[in-house]
Length: 262
Image (cartoon, rainbow, N blue to C red; front, side):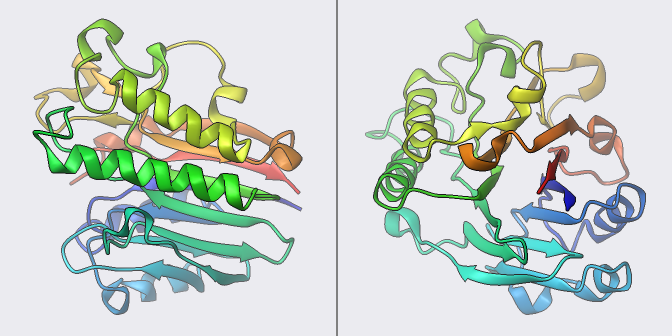
């Protein structure tokens, strides 16, 4: 049974409900994973989603900050969440489809502006979060699983507009890239997006600070779709819906898609 999945940092699901509905109507993924929902679970606007057939949701919420949700047209059961680095943040939720595939939705801490844990507590929290993820995957090797979300790291040189200029910018520093690689290796995760699109510049985030984000095109690929080796060959049709960055009152992220034949 093929199904299409999308991941999107929505930057407030209540504020941007209209463009979530637009995505569901126009693109109709079977599963949509949202990050930075900035809403308690009970205040997520589920009625409109349900009217479009997305009657299943697993979520963790927080007032004004963080928050992750998985909307699905397919039956899904919640299989828990983890509080990595003991931050008390709503940054992870997992759901399982009837075909046995577990979907992990992550929102890794952004890490602040200074890439030094001694000077910037948030950067230390980000590194600790990744360490806990890595250790969990080592201890409980994931199987038949997909990991998606805003991981807040652009690992490859062609995942950013300028590798040289961003080497000391949080999201592309060597220590972050190294820790993300260790986390990926610990679970044996395969980067589905780059499996499908192995070459070339590819971004999923463009700063609000750019007056004309499209013309400047100073993007980063912060949003990822990974899969465990036992199902990675089933993933295909990866794409970034760049146009969504230009929709009315947009998120600064664009949705990333993949289809799995399982």
